[in-house]
Image (cartoon, rainbow, N blue to C red; front, top):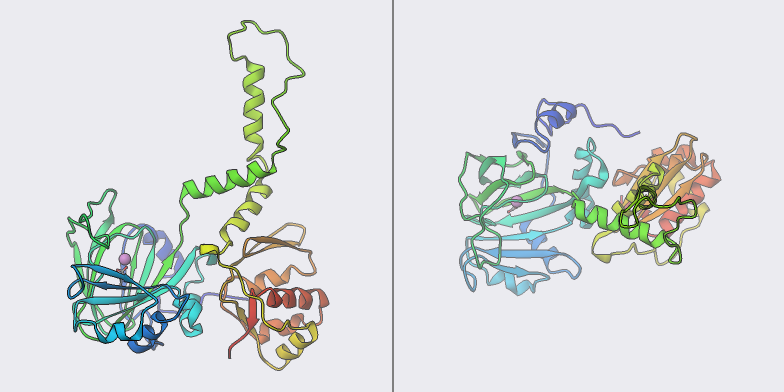
Length: 394
Ligand code: SIN
Ligand code: CO
């Protein structure tokens, strides 16, 4: 099964456990040569090409040379827009490049010491000399990998509680940024930033490409609101307060113990069942953002065609709109959460959960031992036909 490569240099000479203990969500870390073989899979021209595609989220930020300082433009862009840009002082940013290019998606496999659901996307930026998005704060953890060229970073060292933002700009720029550390990162270098640590990265050449592996952290308000909405939908609309076992009250104006205990029990019952909460969380956290849905293949695959494909050495990969996570149960069964659906896998099918979730590619070698179990092949076939998995591109 999947393991974190012990030879990975992503965290320098730190183990994932050491990194998590000392840095994760606590303080920044620079790792020189974290990805010595990272061969930036995208040229600036290819990134610009992606930013011209429909359905791809992209932005241009022009500190100078735009309609006004710090102009923000949203894609998709016309190719001519790139011809008209100034020589310097701008940045192009494209979100979810991991979903657009498998070579970039493969980057996520370096982060498998963290739960897959926490990973958001890989954003790729290109900036000519002096290009920057300005000094700012993000609410999420981010690993910034220098893919090509160089960027000078100035960063704070502690998370900031309350920031002051320059008013009336298109972008959120810190009014009172003070650098506490400064360094230049080159190809293969990495900067990890916990949430809310101020940072200011400026390109120092015309080749600067930065790959930001960003994380998700749902707001407590959103978690609780969604949970309560789900709980609400399960309450019988005709059910009402009742007190068939009450004794006479000691004072008619008092909110007596029977009344209070009945109401407390109603509310506590909403969160009494751990399995129920876990199931809600699995569906909540695997629901794709922005109302997206998996797209089923034009021609469904049959179980026998899938078997032949795997026998021939072709594996599967995660579909472009696919969020998978699982919970294993003590009786050997598992629940596979797939884009907001909870799929119950009986013990015979339960291996599917580990096979498909938490990775981009499912090699044929991992699938082959399961081809003799019809229930597993059927489940994999259904996942392909629902667009959650697809035949591997290579
Ligand atoms: C960039 O790639 O230009 C922005 C990254 C960041 O500062 O979060
Ligand atoms: Co940032």
